[in-house]
Length: 138
Image 1: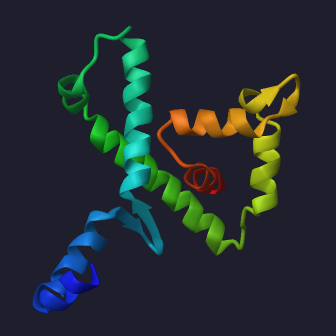
Image 2: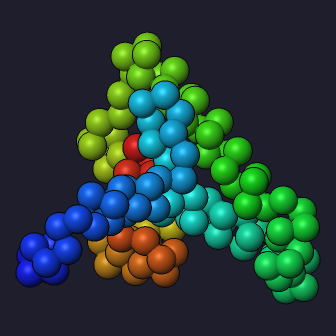
C-alpha cells in the first residue's frame, strides 16, 4: 500500500477524498451517518417489507415504494434526536448498553445472557458486535 501511495502521490489526495465521501451517507450537524448505518437500515426495512409481502418483494418494488429514501429519512430523524440529546448533554454509557444487551431475551439461554448466542445473532445480521453496540448507543 505504501509503495502504491509513493508511486501515485498526485492521485493520493483524490483517492482519500473519494474514500471519505464513499463512507458517509449523510451528515446532520456534527453527526455523520455512515454507509454501513444506511445499508443496515435499508436492509431492515427491506426485510420488513419482504415479510409483509410473504416473499413477493424485490429491489424493483423497494425502489418503486421509495425504500432507499425512507431508510435515509429514518436515519436523519434519528440523527436529529441524537444531536438534540447531545445539545442537552445526554449520553449513553457503555455500561448502559451492556445492561440493555444483558436483558435482551434474544441473547439469553435459560434466562442468562449468553455471549455466543449474542455474537452469532449479531453476525447473522451481517454486523460486528462493535457496530451493533454503536447502533444501540446511538
